[in-house]
Amino acid sequence: MGKMLMWFVLGVTAFLKPAWAEMKVEVRPDREEPVYKCGETATFAINVSEDGQAVTKGNVTVVFTVNGRRRISQQIVALGPERAAASASLGEPGFLLCEASIRVNGALGSGRAVAAFDPESLPPAAIMPDDFNAFWAAGRERVDAIPMDVQLAALPEYSDDRQESFKISLANIDNTRIYGYLSVPRGTPPYPAIVSVPGVGVGEPSGPNREYASAGSLSLYMGVHTHDLGLPREEYDKLRAGPLAAYSHIGAPDRERYFFRRAILGIDRAVRYLMSRPDWDRKHLVYNGNSQGGGVGLMLAGLNPAFTAVAATVPSLCEHNAQRLNRGANGVQLLVHAPEDRKEEYAKMADYFDAVNFARKIRCPVVMSVGFLDTSCPPWSVYPAYKVIQAPKRIFPGYQSGHGMSRSLREFLHPWLEGQLGRADPVPPTAE
Image 1 (tube, rainbow, N blue to C red):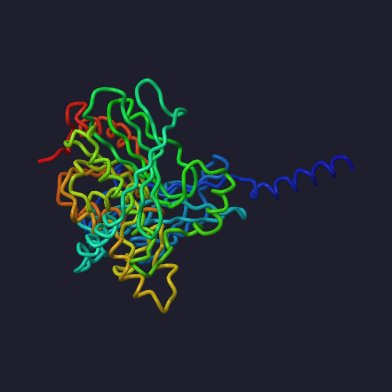
Image 2 (cartoon, rainbow, N blue to C red; image 1 turned 180 degrees about the horizontal axis):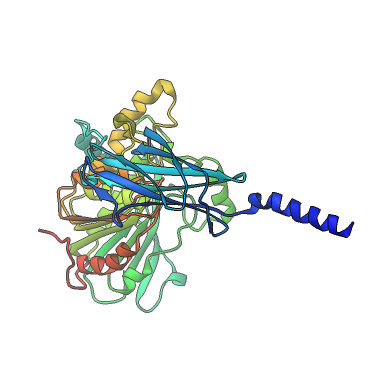
């Protein structure tokens, strides 16, 4: 009886194991840097393992999709002693997504990889409105008609013997204010200046970018919202769950009331205040931001030609109208969630707030990055913005990365920013 019970327990354990098993499907393109010319073939190797042991029996379903939307083929690939593989090609610029999935003993595993085909030639879906410049000029005029009412509040807890930090707010359109942090070096002016905007979210920023001020630069860190900084946590929770739950859609499709119109005009006003300060050196005005902050940086530099350099890491707010060219949406998904009977209105409005259209106007050096596996700011949204920039530029692709900064960019960015701020030898790309 004891042996029977033991075998019963072992049998049940073996039967349940697939539910606990770690399935891993690894998909790898045949190039370390998976960038191809149109018409070439990309081959993806597929390895399947369960609890660290190679799986050599079974069929893998492989789906190839272009630019996150258009499926071009589905293949069934048999596993065997040798590595399984699947191939596909693109005849036009774009991104080929290879997704492989398999079910083994009831456990489902999947993996993905991306290959690019002439990515820097990918045309934008964004269309420049005829009155784009007039629309934003009118917005600036509206802001300028309001007294600036700059309010600075010292922050001793963020200040030290190298820099002094402040909360800053300025009057903005629609009876609102724009809020942020300003950090000022304790030294001998004038100073270069750097501007940043945080990534997407609702809540207390991590604090002033004091490291820039400690090294000798004016540092302006602006939020996109209308609420003050330093609120109790529960207040941010209420905002996040309530009126700001989907803030990137607020006001659409009315271009006069859209969320980012107020945000961009307010931050632009804060930048122009920074430029009016007697302690700015009037030579170096640099921007550094990622995700939402990266997209806002492209917008600000397109709006204000005084910027001398921009770093935009995995920038969002690009290619809102990607569906025009049968591509997948960006993380904002402005058109995805638009009511069916108003999609044309949303599409028309979106072009006024597409970072691609601002990028067309940038004339200072730009550094960008892109993650091939990024689903928030997918590569088919980032590369069109890079393509239209008519200035010295460089892009850092993360071939196996998602929404984050690649190691190569991390190593490059600090020396480049220091050079653009005039505190070190310049590193290309630099102004022509």
